[in-house]
Length: 328
Image: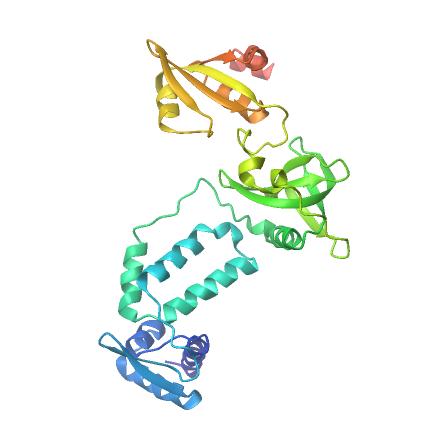
């Protein structure tokens, strides 16, 4: 092994000890990919650089810094933090993800190599799978700035690309980040209207935090508690007006899906007759709801409200009847 590799290994082991972790001959072998003889030599060098004290964990002898607290890590604690870090990948490149990762590293350093291997075998039983990557590597700066603004209650100016392709700047009071269907949204109040809107993170090309501005007042629970913000929303849209009862008649695979999956807390499902089922929600009619109902055609009919029934009929009539109609 080259002197550079040995130096790198020693520096890495010292970092483990300085974080309050433990080392053993076996853990050094595993971490540094060396034999038992080299691992023992590394341990002798560590004793020269740091004042170490020894202890036993099961049948394994370990060493830690004499001035570090005697931390105990358990397999369950390590697994809990590991699963948490894996499931919050959308916070990558922010101080919060780094803090969780550092805590994970400390826990790994505080348990035996045998326990680490046992935990790794257990963690392989979990696979965090999504439809997309919500971390948005190109949006790390925007995410960091939004988190800082929310924590300090500072207004921001957001350069935003709208759904029609146009761009514009919005001055906002950011209050809530939402992970919805593998995409990250910001809910915020627009200045000066006070209107609440949702903004897609990946559509933000820049987020400027007004650090010198006065902190905005913490809004009422209606604007900060997600249960209240989205209680009448069918998806991510908010402030859509008065909610109303939406009732659909569905059949076939659609009825099976909706009997198995609850799309809104107010959802109710009951048999009508034959193959038809009645599904109801109390929600505000929004573009997402219209798109969802259209996706269920022809196995859906709108029973109420009449306004939604008309929207679906208009959209269905406007759909081209053939490929030739689309390219004319």
